[in-house]
Length: 321
Image 1 (cartoon, rainbow, N blue to C red):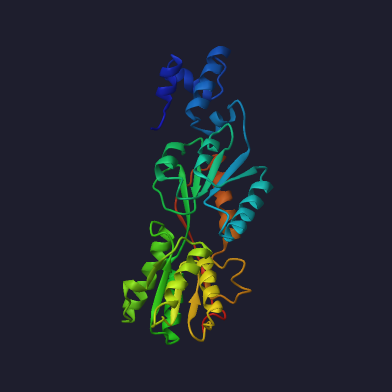
Image 2 (cartoon, rainbow, N blue to C red):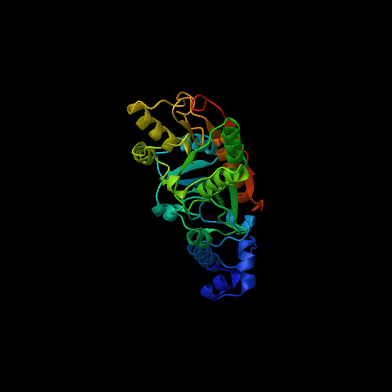
């Protein structure tokens, strides 16, 4: 529930104009009333404008980055980009990896948050986000005036990757997806099936394997693929970590990549280049840098909640012949 000036006035036992005068720095209010109003605003996380924010009892000059785990190495580049912009603008960075970090999403601890974790639900974000506490999300698009979405354009580069594979003559395909609830996985899979339908290449749902974006789930999926007498020409993976896990199984079994089976990923993680993995490269340093820039601009008074899509590009390497 959004708190407004009327709620603060009622709780303080004063008029709305008195609250407005306090938040706008007027001197015609007693010190005791000012202190009471500041305490209530802090409690309710209510600071409706730049002048109000400057009147808080403390200013953290810190931002929070919340992500799901440490397993996916591309997070490091995002953190580097966030920290680069934050540090150059006088802000500290707090990194948190669990839902419990909601307790840090308040003005007394941080001035705003960058979110890349679906455990931070839309309901939580809607409850926290306000004019005095802006949020940037990197994993979904939300319609909220205090939440800016910066997301990867998954569909176009996956379409380009798939058309390249079809043009190379590959006929049979398997898809290793991430969590099906994520927008990233949904967009990547849609591009996959759309191109196959466009080129009239049949695809059976039995060749869809579910993973969780971790290398271990790619390893398990490849183990199942190895049990089949008819292996696909290509295993298209929704991220690099799962692709690398699958490649480990194929290598252990003496299955050659790409001679016997081609493998592709998505992300361009640190190991993708040395492993020769064909993938889609997301500019993650720039992604983090832009997230920090837009968040800090909103903290300091800019109002910009328009969704931004980041382009990614196909990197053809050794895992496709």
